[in-house]
View 1 (spheres, rainbow, N blue to C red):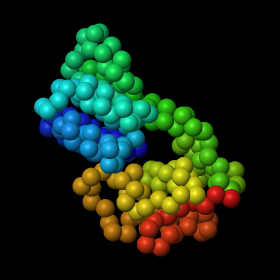
View 2: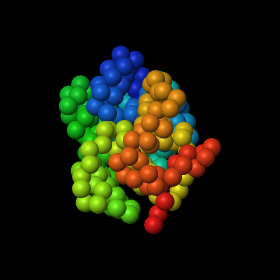
View 3: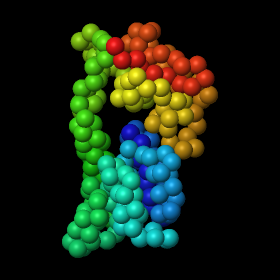
Length: 219
């Protein structure tokens, strides 16, 4: 799951990046509202974690602007503004959740996972293509009814491909869903994941589009 953190406190941002990456999130960070709006317009994340006290503009203004074009993007406000009025203003401006600082990391992770489940349940929880089925709510994958174990990144890769079955996914777009900015990634890492998935799902399930990327073909 890809997350964009908008936070101007460098120490807090660093701690959040480290903790959430350990939990398996692909998380990137910007420190200003303008940078956040640019990233959302060009490389939208699956979830936005937004501070309100930003150096260039108020976080509520960021939220109001992004809602004009990205009505479905889940937004969790993470801020020191903890009054009831502040919470109401944030939720009324389009936030999906509101967590005041200081907060417990376990609670933040739980709330992010809840938002992730909400994304999955917006469509069908279960995707079935040929003999392969993927249950997004339980994160289980089965082939011919038999469950198979997939490492986190293989599961994330398969989920993106199956959700976009029939459409070619470029290497860049797939790597964006798997890795954070600046994360060291071997040049053949994506090919290795694809190779392992083909061994488990069948060699024909994921097709290579030479020079572009990969796709799962619809029956």
